[in-house]
Length: 325
Ligand code: ADP
Ligand code: MG
Image (cartoon, rainbow, N blue to C red):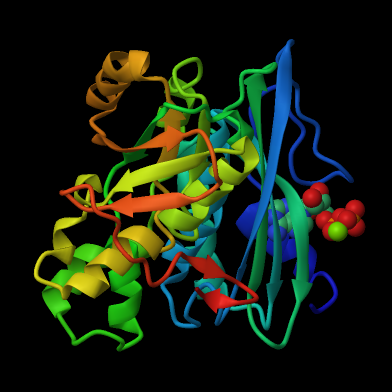
């Protein structure tokens, strides 16, 4: 960074007014007031060029996604966003790129009431690296934790599954080109919607929740492992995005069960809560699907077809050190 450049850049692209009572960009630390009786929910997610995004991705969409994937973690705990910080490494100062990135980031920050209050800016010749930390609040002891699922809970999934996964495969040339379908699917990959209202609405209704970032089987597996339970999952009940229609059965199944970058919530809740959960989905205009059941016993997911027969599963999800498994 040239002398002065770093600070001009921060002032121009990242410093924005913050709500009264908060101290934002410009001091050594940001200061955030916390509501009495609330716990602070904190989460960090990185996006690395070449790993998580293409170098030529629209910077506005990247700005959106960098914050969205973090807000999705707050959503999964039922937390209300308070503020966020942004650490960013850039090969060079590209005004157009920064303008777009900042616009996408701040637009979602405003929409989610999650102002940018600090961060760090450095140079990295090898490419863009972005790390966002979000902070939120949730009333003491009420957060939706992974370790709170109970045997006989229903398993629910919000929205639809699979669109982001097939969009990525089309972009990578792993599936025969289908430009129109890609056009429908691409926003799911590049502009995910964090389910903040759903997460907060589920406080007191759901037992456990997680956001689906690495694939349904893998992420549900995290709930089951933390809760020491098993589960059955009903393949036919999974809410497939229409863009999966007509794709080969194995591609479709993989996208549903192991497709990442979904950012819908998977949650478990007692059967007695079905009605208020459906009402919450209707109120939010967000379909909520009951897709399985938590079971006592081994930590394992059994995927069943419409006849109740076990379905063999090829891939479970994504692991950064193992790849797709
Ligand atoms: P320090 O040397 O105290 O760490 P910096 O010089 O790194 O401070 O940053 C100056 C101010 O700008 C700090 O308030 C910091 O939080 C903020 N800042 C730096 N980079 C970013 C960024 N990418 N986004 C938002 N705020 C940033
Ligand atoms: Mg610093």
